[in-house]
Image (cartoon, rainbow, N blue to C red; front, side, top):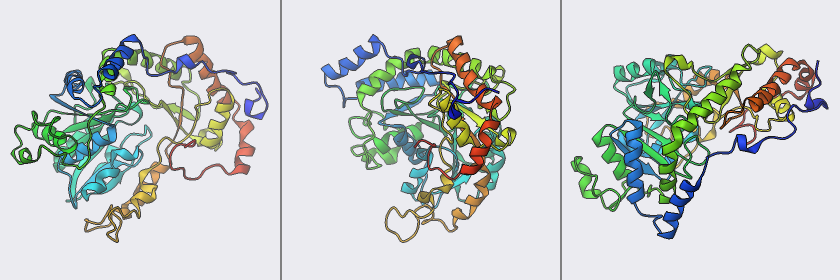
Length: 439
């Protein structure tokens, strides 16, 4: 046995190589584009953003694209665009970022939560359980870059006449069986903020092939100088084009749009290198107990896009019941300091979805316009709370030597995990975290 660093042994990696993980990749072309905005005070214009919208729509393979100040605003606009309203229900996987569905209360709609599977992805087998006559929208989240099972999901949506919003914030450019995610639903929206695989400062974008959805999305968060030339076919919107119908300005800062145009040019090739590195890392850990990769079989024509926030799944029963919290602590001590457990918390567990009263109506906003209490179904999502995961190194470049060193970190902890069991049991690791372990 090799003594673990957490217990006084020597760490596998004494110092981390920052360049291996630095993101986004920025060069002179990015700086020049940004400085053009600064020098000419173009921050609040629309010309650069309109060019980016055209380029992004073409790259995505959709007819229309609308840029926003962030991904949450893009998703909110998507909800308005598909007609979400009072008394409607919207289904969403429980394990995702709150921006996938929390804003449904702004439209008087009720969020209904669906379970996830072991790949942290929406479980198609649990969707029909969530559907009622009030169900209007299904949110599909390609979580941590893993493309959802769209072959199973879309027939369910069609059967019940549901509008489908794809949240592609973690999976820009990813493929499901050869087709880009974001091209399956009625509309897709995504974040392009600085931490994402497609990183452009603070930005969001929505894409669709439906002209009415496009015009409604444009009208919701944009006004006059943004939308006057675009509201053409949806007659009931034309009288209002001077004012953003959502009462909030969603216009993109053109500094971000300028960066996004440059990043788009190189995004696919950079993602290809990320995938090469990430697959090589997981290949080196194949067959080890207790952990499994959150990744697809690329032979099917699917891929993990830029592998945003790379995750591994955890099976504590294969490691003597060792908690994922203790496992991550041991990994950090060996030199990978970014290893934390959890991912996003399960939304159905948070007080926001239990008791929050947005408008002072004397009743939780999640259910105020519904004739049933959807909170009663939250207990049916308890199995999602048992699906455990942890961060793995998110390599931005392929370097075989360093990839092997990081794989060695995980091998060492797994092969010597018995050293941790007694202390872990004494500490009683576990509990509910609202966010990742280090939030």
